[in-house]
Image (cartoon, rainbow, N blue to C red):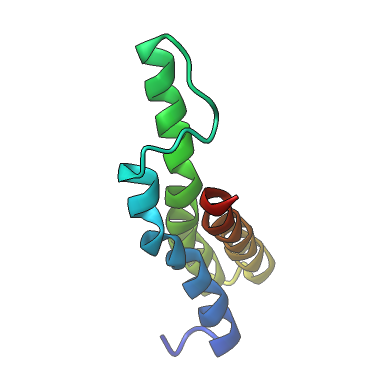
Amino acid sequence: MNDFPRWLLVLAFLSVAPVFVSPLYLFGGMHLFGYTDWTAVNFLLYMAQNLLWALPVYLFFPGLDRYRRGFYKSGTAIILLGDVLAVLSAVLPFV
């Protein structure tokens, strides 16, 4: 962890925070994108809804990897994108 500045690690931790909200997405019975009569479409909507919390967690790893390899701007941009999605995933279940 000495490869990264502390401000970047704080930003990267925010990308992992949606793990704490994930039970609401997985077991909360939410339908953020609506509900249809077709089971296959409902499954795809369920998978898309779970991308809201899983994608920021995924972006944590390539963001830090890009930063470590010397691509500072793109690594920081990936982590910031993960942070925006993390805030969105934390706010959306309560709206």
